Image (cartoon, rainbow, N blue to C red):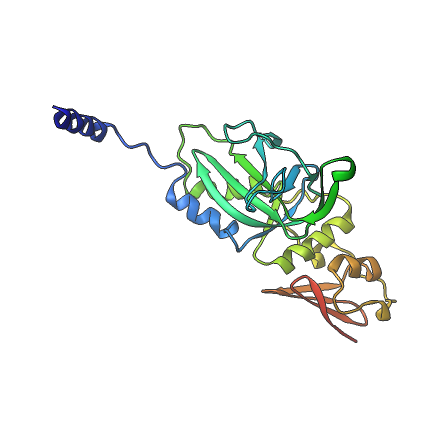
Length: 264
């Protein structure tokens, strides 16, 4: 009798129509051309979003902790999902901060991106004599709710919209050096660009002054440090993990976000 009941149950389950995959496979393929786990670095263009240590509130996590936010209608709010509990912000994300895409997941017409900081932040735990502060990587899980009806299955045609939507918070780049270069330009400009795609410095910035402080540029400096000293370059060329900035009387070559060589 039990065998018959189980068999009947399986028949009923088989008769239930399988829910359509959301978003569609072709959407995922196109979206992950811009946002791919372990291969995408993003620049924070909306400061103030909460973040927390990857080791969690108590410092005992295996490195998977994060602070979750929902991005709905272009605005963020603290997530209130069933798994979003005991969230204590260790800090907030800064304008121009560089993060790496740790994971991508999909649910209905939503994409979740867990972003981990490239550089560690100061995290303070405890109080009184037990208080401790040390630098640790931080993570934020962005849940992007796309502005489409829940009944609509997102396809490849929706991918450009989705990427633009995400890039109002996180500008994506295929390498850390490109992300750092853009971050330095963003910070130097003092405001978030409105264009969904990062503009080249040569098309947007005025030429650097004719006189430059050559001796102050040293191997290991960041793009922001070079900008503070020399101003914006006349021309910029980026290839894979190498970026070349050209000034009137010298060229600065970056590799992986740091000055590798200065040519006079």
